[in-house]
Amino acid sequence: MKALLIAAALLAAPALAAPMTGDVHNAPLPANVVDSSFVAPDGSRTLQLSMVIKAPVAVLWKAFVDAGEFQKWSAPVAAIDLRTGGSIEASYDPKKPIGDPDNIRHRILTYLPERLLVFQNVQAPSGLKGREALARVVAVLEFTPLKPGVTRVQLSQTGWGDDPASNGLYGFFQRGNAQVLAHMNATYGGKGGAK
Image (cartoon, rainbow, N blue to C red; front, side):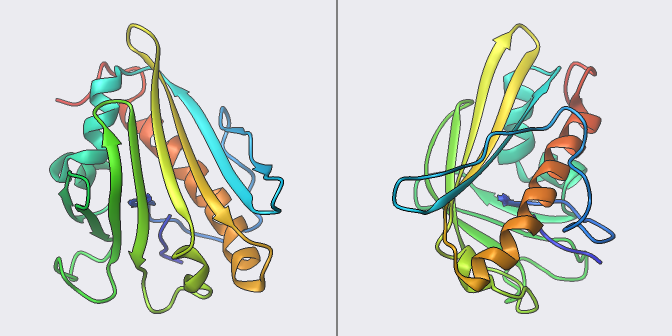
């Protein structure tokens, strides 16, 4: 089953998602993905996953914010307008052009170059069950250099509720976001970065 993540992605990115196959609800998290998810005092949930990747922060940042680079490892169709109020749009169907009503689209709320990207979904594929819950979630992508050539990438999604729509998507994004981090690691980790 072809699906989105960020991004998300990004969510994402654009939904920070990569094409995924199989039943992601029951798939184990990839190795080296750290799940530090938590419940806030108000009862809202934050889905928080991270991975340490052997690549410079500049390379991993570019992988998420440069449309050409994003297309190499995540989605074949992508457009990124990197600015506060800008957008991230992607499709995993190469036949869907930018602007298609079934594409994934996020509004960039703010960013700090090579450190932080915050965005929120404004359009999800019509077939995504519970997509109304995704519109209430804010994605926070953080890049932390640990030492030269080694970066922690952390993807958090804040604002998940305890309603049926949120519950239906939370597990999907937990596995999907983990797969996005693992795919980024497989593409850039230990290779010194993009060419």
